[in-house]
Amino acid sequence: MTTAKGRSNHRNRQNPSFSSRMSHHCIFLLIIWGVAVWGQVPVRAQDSRDETAPTTEVESTVEEEIPDAQQEAMSAGELFRSGVEKARRQDYAGAIADFSETIELAPEYIPAYYNRGLARSLSGQVDAAIEDYTEVLELNPEDIEAYNNRGILRYQTGDLDGAIDDYSEALERNPNKVNAYYNRALARVEAGDLQRALEDYDRAILLDPNDVDAYNNRGILRSRLGNFTGAIEDYNQAIRRSPSLAEAYYNRGTALAASGDREGALKDFQVAAQFFLEAENTEKHQRVLEAIDRL
Image 1 (tube, one colour):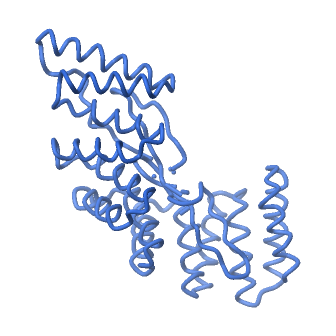
Image 2 (tube, rainbow, N blue to C red; image 1 turned 90 degrees about the horizontal axis):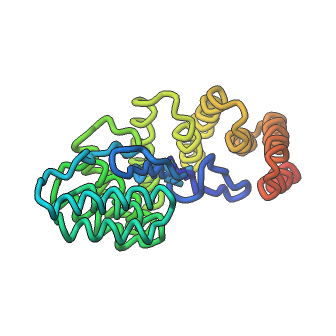
């Protein structure tokens, strides 16, 4: 997936690489209902991460109160709070209805659009969610999280250019936003812009030297570019920080095999196979066994 951190979709001709997060976008979607952090889904945030897919960190710009003392605004406030509670119970249809009524009464209240976008994305209404984030940005063109979240959704719909543009807009406003570099790297890999994707992973790791998924994904990309020495070092870094990350052992094994180190590759494949077996991941366990047979 990567969270919006993602996972890599890279597959080596002989031994497909595993990503440590969900497949597709490394997206992390940090979901905010009202003023409270409600949870995360494994796609790096709507604040995006899942190449690994895609996990999010969305820092909310949600205001605590609807700034209007009129009776209509009070009704809007009640509807908004009702929508928040319904969303927390995963009643997304009810939440969407409440946020929509809030917008009818308070059409410039950004949190209602933002939360409706989240609820719509979680209920599969991606195009409608994109429209909500677009409305947020029309009301506040400096909303970094709205750019990041819309970028995640655009990535999911295959609009890679749009996703990259959104992540770039977020980074223009906050050059230290790790998730935006991570997610832009995922989109750039899929768009075939491998060198600039590598630069994005470099920047993400510089800002967060303990980002296991970024090391794993950069290793996959370096292997794809033929830099097996660099890839192995990235997998080493990932394993130092997450010693039970089966995907990193498997990926390091593929890089070692490509470098001619059959013995080292076998050891890594055996470790990966054991971890996958313990996790009852029969599909990946079988794929590792097949990789061992090909050595």
